[in-house]
Image 1 (spheres, rainbow, N blue to C red):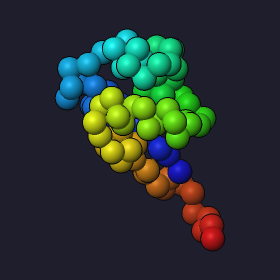
Image 2 (cartoon, rainbow, N blue to C red):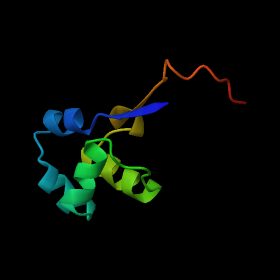
Image 3 (spheres, helix red, strand yellow):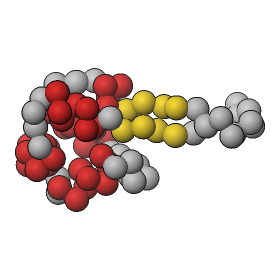
Length: 76
């Protein structure tokens, strides 16, 4: 399973920098960068909510799930 983070696209559409987003959301630039570069292990709903409020978007606009083709197991 792979979660793709499209934060770059959302920022570009709004002509907003990572620094501006971090300031508006109230977290560090480093934490936004970790999320933007898909290195985050988890994201708090409060952080996701704040990002969506600032960017005026839905979570699906910045996050997408892409199935891992090498994972043949079926989980219920």
